[in-house]
Image 1 (cartoon, rainbow, N blue to C red):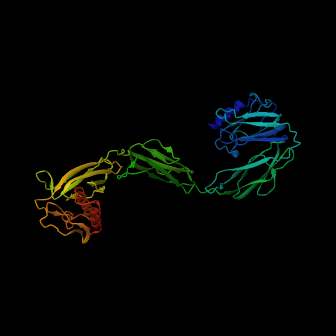
Image 2: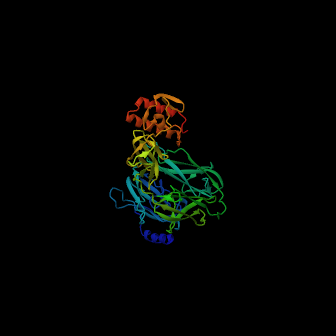
Image 3: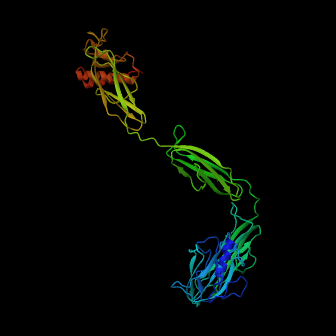
Length: 509
């Protein structure tokens, strides 16, 4: 296809005769005072190299679009001088088509006469509209030019993973001069001897190499010698082994192993031979696509990921698969727990609880789950609920309670009220009648007063009863003494002495 396109364009462009220019040719010819070189490769958006400055006078133009300059596909390009756009010189008409497949192997030469001013050049093939540039031509006085040309070199060719050139390397030298213009360009390979540079230099000998280069302008200024170094290695044996490719999935997972909200897939391939060229994937039966970066899957449901890799030698790995499921994130929990209280115990005809009342709290949460349940008896502090609460202090009581879930939602505070009375006329027939309140052998110094119904303070504290733990006993003493303070039997100071003795004791421990 490229050869047919080149032939067609050649037939079209051969009808254009340069004005003030000799026809393009590949045959050797006597060079003009000035040589300007344009090159191109596979790119259709820019010339690979192009001069920007020149001096007026006879000029040899070299236009090369060849395999040596990097054209590996046979893509044709033209070098066309603009003869219509205002603001540019129109005295040179040049329209040369070059292709690696033409009779000159893509290298053409023409002689023109440049005048001071600006020339605009471009590629006239449709689709190559961005290949455009300007050439500034001075009057060539050159008397004050003391600046040598700028000269650079680029190395091209197939390279292995270590950066060595496989089989051959091509060195392209480019020189520019904003003053009097470039006169000559020279090069040498491995310190042999300098010779004129007319086209890219191809080096094929295996080993380490250095190419030196320099340029001289029309005023006689010569640049310092530059150099590029590289190594050429033998072509490797044919690669017949496909790459190794793996897939890794990441993201937050639930207890069933499903990905919550999103799953990220990362593909990795290695190849010890010619190297990895491409990685491809197909998700849920879609066509294979080129993999460049990890991708995120957000659609809920089960997914199937197919993947493969191809190396530079064209070996493709066996297609592999990975399956996973994405589920929707749970909805945010904004509902507090439901909590209730149940009071149990023996009751008299008035509904009061005889001797003791037991309060059991129950909390449920359908969202994130119950995190904590708390209660406060009468004027006591909030306490974590762990087991049913036994209230033995005679009198009216209020037990407040609440619950919080794992999302931090707290229920509204609720309460249960009840009354505890002594059992019978003499609630404590075997009453503790010691003179002072004594807890676990610790004498508080507080009078062991009769609280009514034949029970003393020591009877109500009941240090010999069974308690789930020491903290439960201390809370029981706090509740008993709080009721006695409310009823006027104790004052705050006396209550504090009794509660501190209870805290120091081992009761319930």
